[in-house]
Image (cartoon, rainbow, N blue to C red; front, top):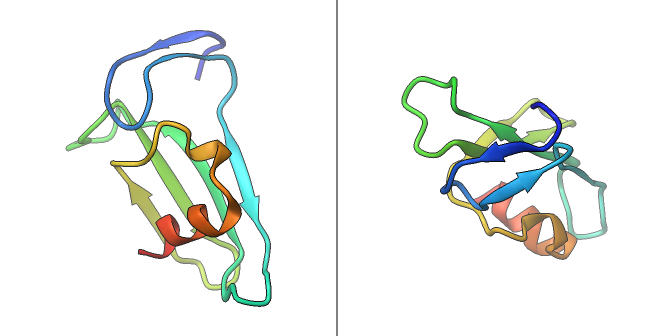
Length: 88
């Protein structure tokens, strides 16, 4: 994504984003998986529901999930809440 690219409405947030957001969720005593979560530009994906999506990649078993509907402030969610989004 280009720096300060204008983002269209839908898919979890609106406005300008200067850098893509990524979070890494490490194992905890209750967690079975190590997730890497990132927000991506989905405008070039055929059949995209929104211009942005959240991609959850599990480092331990290769599971990849794309979320079209996600909270606007997903990046600030507590680890357990973000982990639940990825594991649904």
